[in-house]
Length: 435
Ligand code: UGA
Image (cartoon, rainbow, N blue to C red; front, side):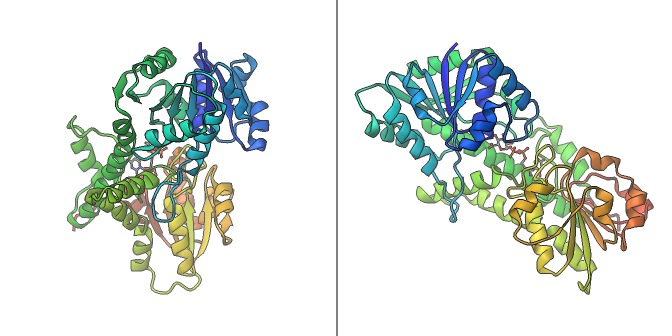
């Protein structure tokens, strides 16, 4: 059992801290947001993550997990301190490290004995060195410490599951002592360790996200070619995925990737390339292709609608993927803005993300409590998130409620034949017709 501090209670920090408590460590999660900490002390999670709230409550009760706004907690016999604060994109795509740097200063001021400081935030290559520098400058006396890179590979919505079932734990450090501390910390997870230097560990995180994003943009380009040639992207992806060197994951064509990670990290890696005088051509295109995919529903509508006066469009799904209420960089955001630019009336429904969309959109649209309400009287419907409940939709009812028959399936949830039979003009992603 170790004493662990986790600074930052976003989804990475909170999930990591809670799961470490679950395996027996004594964990204090720190955040400067007092309201958040007050709620957490009462067992209320600020984010929706499957199993997380139950786990928080259990570990508070069993006195392994506590919450505080005060960094002074670091002072006493803490072995490991995680930095898990946000690293948002700046206007120019560069990474804003100000929160990480502020925490490093605080750690420097509070450290009283040897500790391993773990960079869990997604930070550009070179950040371990930078954090160590800041800590050293702020130490009150001569104390030894190590800064380690230990990136996370958690997906939003399945973050708790991923913590317990990760493919690998990457540790970037040149200190044997620090590596041993982390091996011990993570031992109960029974996962493969991959030990390397801090720079490589920092790059592994960006490389993994950028590669997955590139896989998505690649399959989306293949989908666009399928539409022109009569191919079916679902078959193409399945056939490709049977080759184990390619793998069958992340080959779902659609309206593009979103979320708090892929767009930010791809831009961050591009920026790192620029800083070091390297033009990262592939991932530049990954982003460009993704922007194009997000515009695809509008292009389909423009081909089908001559006069936009009085046009009503229904949107099913707002979250950037199912299982979350997160709409950050969601394709829905771009598509709603484009439709508004055309003067369309917009009706939307998402099982959980209506409220988050309402809080970020600066203009009014109609939020509906069920999918049928969202499609009523609409000239076109666009499905943007593959929520499982959409598979159960009564499509005949949808067809009846709509004014016109355009149905754009941005996530290939339905079968073309069935949609045609029900009278829709159906536009899936990447499924070409025979003629
Ligand atoms: C992603 C990575 O998958 C995690 O490994 C990583 O830890 C995380 O970012 C992070 O850096 O924190 P996440 O953003 O939660 O996780 O979501 P994903 O499930 O990866 O999906 C990202 C986007 O890609 C979604 O918009 C999804 O709809 C889209 N996607 C995914 C596709 O369009 N096609 C696919 O085949 C897969």
